[in-house]
Amino acid sequence: MSHSGKELLKIKGLVKKFGGFRALNGIGMDVGEGCIVGLAGPNGSGKTTLINVISGVYRPDGGSIEFCGRSVYKLPSHKIVRRGINRTFQVPRPLSSLTVRETVKLAAVYGTCEGNKEETIRQALEIVELEGVKDVVSAGLTFAQQKMLGLATALATKPKLLLIDEIAAGLSHQELFKISQMLLRIRNTGITMIVVEHHLGFIDALTSDVVVMNAGGNLFRGSIQEAAQNDEVVEVFLGR
Amino acid sequence: MRRRYLQALSVIILVAVVFLLLPRFYSNQSFLFNLMLYLGLAEGVNIIYGFTGYLPFGYVGFFGAGAYGSAIAITFWHISPFVCVILGGMAAVATGIVLIPLLRLSGAYFAIANLAASQALYLIVANPTMEKITQGPYGIDLSSVYNADAGYYTMLAVLVFAMVVVAYIRNSDFGLSLLAIKEDRVTASLAGVNVVRARSIAWMLSAFVAGLCGGAFGWFTAVFYPSTVFSLDVSVFTIVFALFGGVGTLAGPLLGALLLYSMYNFIGISTPQYFQLFYGFLIIGLVLFLPDGVASILQKGKVYVP
Ligand SMILES: Nc1ncnc2c1ncn2[C@@H]1O[C@H](COP(=O)(O)OP(=O)(O)OP(=O)(O)O)[C@@H](O)[C@H]1O
Ligand SMILES: [Mg+2]
Image (cartoon, rainbow over all chains, first blue to last red; front, top):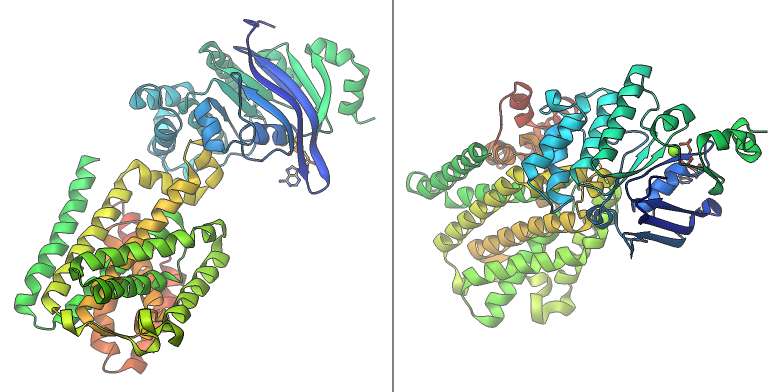
């Protein structure tokens, strides 16, 4: 797409097993610097698992993950974060007893050695519009605010690559539009993104580069319009 | 932030001055020593339980390791008992390092495994085949270096150290990272926190404090047995004191240990049966009505507890 030609992330033949079940079964993809790649697929196709493996939350069982030309395969999360990858959660995982500011501060202090900490915290809170509740404990936030806090925490670690897992799910139409604008603004600060989403409409607003996965493997890559005309894609989405 | 450090500092200075001056007005030095001991141990438990959520039912293992480590160093090396107390602290840290894999367990499994580990250490130390090193079941006799005053002020120094560690953790980014781990390990690591390292450091600091307490206790008491310094009562008392006051703060465990240990001394020793009953009710009441301790009453009223 709008590649500067340089690949930021290269994944090949990734495998993740749960017992005998392969949640990831050989998926591969390249992501160019500065791009937004949409990641779609039916329920249980392995999208969240892929994000968990890339971010070090799960240990992979095979394949390779290269980021900025270096392997991050099987590294622990905190090292992957410091290399410049971060993610959000489909279901927010707030640090309930910490305030919004404390949470973001933690990420700014431990997640990166770049930049002025106070400035990083301020910017992260500003982008997600949580300045007004910065002294509220996370347990007291709404679901939508907790999602935004997850995003702010990830941003405060100064990532080069951000993995967004169904940030739109459970949010209203109004909020949805606001968030797509927010993600575009974040991309414009130079952050590359993989955006997991069920609703192709939401992805369409962000990018024309979509990866569709099925059963832990690759099914399709191309624009949404092409995807809609692809028989295999239509089949897995309609479940025929 | 600076203000919070000053508040913590005032608490530390207050406690230190009280125990520095009290012996002039109150002659029961042994009571004052034991009170300091439990204040120190309660802060030690606070480090690991209050900030990381691991409940160390085998905490007494570190205390015993410190008492024995220090006593063995005094007996064999004839160096300054003060240095030996520090070596006792290090013996507890060594024990803690051996037990680091336990931190992979969670909840009750950790508590039980830790308890078992402390009793295993007890059995090793008390074993008659260890007589050449630990005197086995016959106990330790340090009467050649007995010096109650020196032991007393060493314990005071240990208490101050424990309070400083807790004040640091309570107010630093490191402490914030521990609280984050306690809340959600995965979220903490995605904030860039090295979870394994942070919780291991907290564990070893907590062990060090208990070991120093054990060393000071050995010096002050001069004669003790494995059953004294590995008694499960030490774990239980310490944990109840810390919880009663309120973990996660500097002042909470101090308050808990002060109130409950004094009470134990005034009712418990003369009429132990009433105390046991009272204690039982207290623990039930604590769990039911005040799970976050006395400090939480203030915190609910938006009062900052150092
Ligand atoms: N921790 C786990 N243990 C066992 N199985 C798991 C685990 N996590 C995921 N799975 C399984 O792996 C498969 C892929 O799950 P995953 O959550 O990655 O799907 P997804 O594409 O994100 O789905 P959704 O659109 O519903 O979020 C599912 O069959 C799921 O049951
Ligand atoms: Mg998912």
